[in-house]
Image 1 (cartoon, protein in one colour):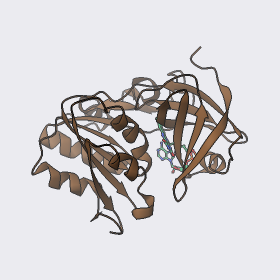
Image 2 (cartoon, protein in one colour):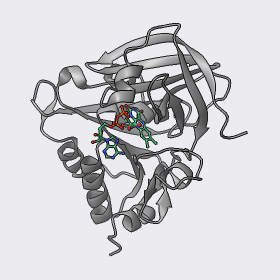
Image 3 (cartoon, protein in one colour):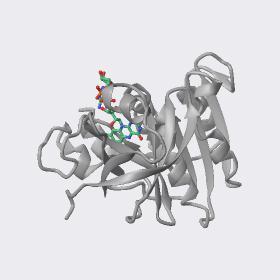
Image 4 (cartoon, protein in one colour):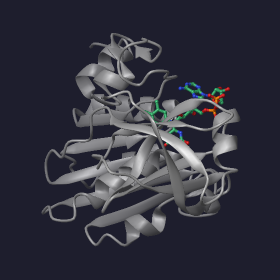
Length: 250
Ligand SMILES: Cc1cc2nc3c(=O)[nH]c(=O)nc-3n(C[C@H](O)[C@H](O)[C@H](O)COP(=O)(O)OP(=O)(O)OC[C@H]3O[C@@H](n4cnc5c(N)ncnc54)[C@H](O)[C@@H]3O)c2cc1C
């Protein structure tokens, strides 16, 4: 049954950056990159979390402390229990052989999982990572360990890589590279900017979007964005769908 939740013991915790931790669980169901799990934290709420690792009977989620539930989750220890159900939603689809992954903050979580899944493809990947500072760049090393990935970083304070927005690196790269498809996840303002550039340059885009979610399985309607439900139609949306969401059909 799609909606049944069970509790799982946290098997490992990795500190990725200030206020960002990855939690691992022994989890029987494999996930595809882009999918999410509904994550219930005892004494708090149930929230969606993108899968950042899946394979060999393990599942990882990478959590940024932003409010009551994520603060509580990030205070848990190995051996504590968390409710999980899923994986739910659609996933990133590989299109073409030169692609760009554009991540802001914890948006690097599903995109690094996606990049890892491309190991056996004949492909060139540019990973563009943006964060507040060098310490906030998550999964940089994970991307760098993939031989088919070129990593480009941007930080707000200039402590690593380009000083400024990650979308500025994208504009620079576009002068010398032709991308078949762009994949993005991160803050809404960054995604909207990536959307505008891809629309202008006529490049296919797949963006993982966030919205407040309750049931996660298309029943309650709380995650509606434009004509879509993020849990059921997404969370990954293509350029045509994004035009409808951003009400910008030209
Ligand atoms: C498909 C999907 C995948 C996600 N994956 C991850 C992930 O991998 N890692 C991660 O850390 N988070 C992820 N999130 C976001 C996370 O589920 C929310 O931030 C969640 O609401 C946090 O709960 P909270 O109680 O800690 O904070 P809340 O009280 O819910 O939120 C704290 C503050 O954050 C802002 N906020 C939170 N969510 C939204 C939103 N959707 N739109 C606008 N503002 C918002 C609000 O201003 C709010 O005051 C994902 C969301 C979705 C839909």
